[in-house]
Length: 78
Picture 1 (tube, rainbow, N blue to C red):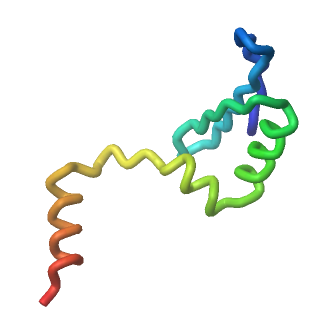
Picture 2: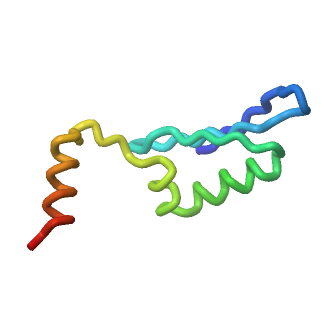
């Protein structure tokens, strides 16, 4: 579900979009207008693939060693 917060700035207001979904990292973006904030929220919430890109799921079991070995084994197959 998306939440839009009005944020006061020195040059008018900005609008922050916060999208929270279970199992996906919180997504936050600031826009200069409420219209742009609403468009972003609707676009991300309606497109599951885009939601995964912006809110790449938490992979706490990933280590640098595993990522490096996976990359090297896939990149340098012979």
